[in-house]
Image (cartoon, rainbow, N blue to C red; front, side, top):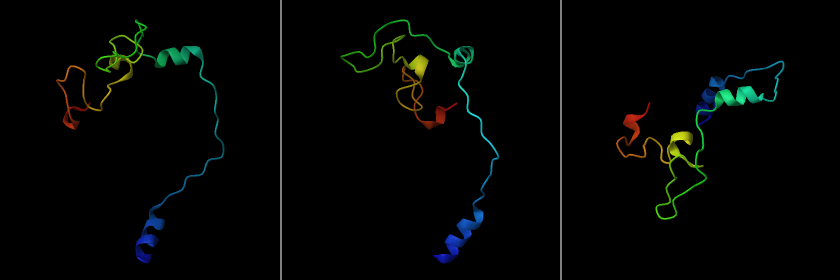
Amino acid sequence: MKDLLKFLKAQTKTEEFDAIKIALASPDMIRSWSFGEVKKPETINYRTFKPERDGLFCARIFGPVKDYECLCGKYKRLKHRV
């Protein structure tokens, strides 16, 4: 067990920095990051509990509800990841 701990400690590499700079993003920079638009005020369908299309929680804008699964159901599981 001690040999294993010694091996793991030898594998770790630490990086040192002299300085780090943090700044606020400008409004133009934030707009360049965006890629969708909320067009309807609806959030979730009260019967199915699924997000409404073009609504506040739309999967087209913010990504799928379940990982590696589209809303149409055509692509499921990890083998269809991008």
